[in-house]
Image 1: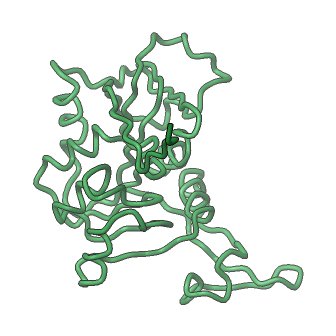
Image 2: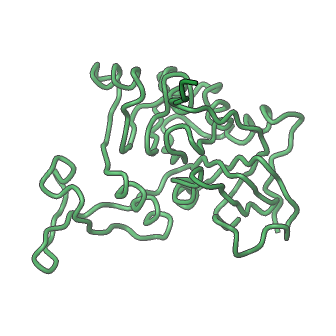
Image 3: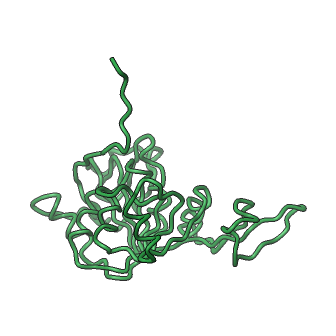
Length: 237
């Protein structure tokens, strides 16, 4: 079996090596929901490179100074395929100024498009979005008297994901809500790069606990994560 861990003197250097071959114009599926479960070290390493015209498929685009918002601020993203973009003022500015392309996709549909792409399914019919701008230009069909719209599966050149635990073979375990879009993104990428908080020996992860089998993962780095919170709500004591 192949050891997929990218070794280096620091996690910063390992992240840089892991994303070193991502070219301008690449399509990238990025895990996470808001700032929860995002591959923040891989994103930062990519932001340090001189690439542009990226097409990113992700639930949202982070915030102005964190997550995919860092790439956006450096004008590295040409197009976003997302379900929600409301936390990022720079996103709004670029979109309204015609500097950024946007393909809106309902959240559940986006998750299923990524899952379908990873499973080798070319497309599927869903009732979500019928009769709205989401369905414009897409094939529709009646099933049992109800209208459905055809959505295509998504396969990307690369996928960046974050997990709680991983082993050297690339088997991944996510933790709680940080699981979100990561499993679907991991299967949708032709080349999948993961960052994990804990690296364990092969065999330490119970097969029943594996969320993403190592067959889907090409590279792995071990790195601490800041886990920033978008909006902190506290009691007034």
